[in-house]
Each structure stands twice: as C-alpha cells, then as structure tokens.
Image (cartoon, rainbow, N blue to C red; front, top):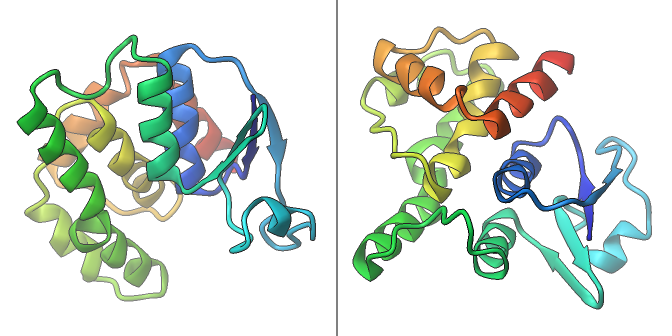
Length: 176
C-alpha cells in the first residue's frame, strides 16, 4: 500500500492517523505541494493529496480513503456499531467545511476572528472517524498558527493526544 502524502496537509493527516490506528503498514511518497509532479495528475486529476494506492485501486479524497480503510480493516473499529450513530458520524465528516474548515482557512488568510469564534461553540466529537476528520486542523491552528484554543477544545485535544496515532501527528506538525 502506498500513500501519496504531504506532511503539511491536514487531509493527509486524516489518513495517516487512520492508518496508524489500524496498524496498517504503508509506503509514504512525499509530494511537494509547491511543485506537484505531473504524474500525480494521473492518479488524481485534481492533483491533490492524499491518494491511496493498493494493488490496482487508486483512491483520492481523504474522507473516502478513511471509509475504505474502516471497511477494509474493521479492527479496531473507528465508527460506532449502531447504524444510526454511524450515519451521524459520517454526516459530521461531511459537514466539516461548514463546522470548521471554512473558518480555519479564513483564519489562515488573516481573518483573526473566524476560527476563534467558531471554536468557542465547537462540539468536539468522541474519538472515531469524525474526531480524526477534525483534529488535524485543530492541531495546526494551535501549533502552527498560534491560536489559543478554548479550554474545552484544548482538553479534547489533550485526551486525543494520549492516542499514539494522534501523538505521531503532533510530532509531524512540530517538525514542519
């Protein structure tokens, strides 16, 4: 299994965390996001990472890759067993841009209030695919962009950081 990856990319971080949680070995291929190789567009016409390649399967898009890994490697489970709860977790992932992503990128562009205000009312999901879908941006907001997190978000991140897969991502961001 090969993961076309970029350390600074939070979408790639989602996939790295799931792979670590599942204990799935993979070969990382680091992509320079400032100078994407032309062959990457053959794997994903959008030229974006992450892209997971396994045998003949070439799969882009972090949310899709996370779902694939959950089904392909069901243990440990990162989605609840109850179908309704699974659906709600998937909905939370689907609403990422509305819930956090748009404000994160506005903050990166210089809107000082966008993300801080959003995080005041952010309801952190319990650990699973939804939490994994959100935590890379929270880590980067705090550690790379210097945002002071509200206490409830900081406590949530501290709990998640007890997991080796999340600690590995904290190390990745610290090295950027």
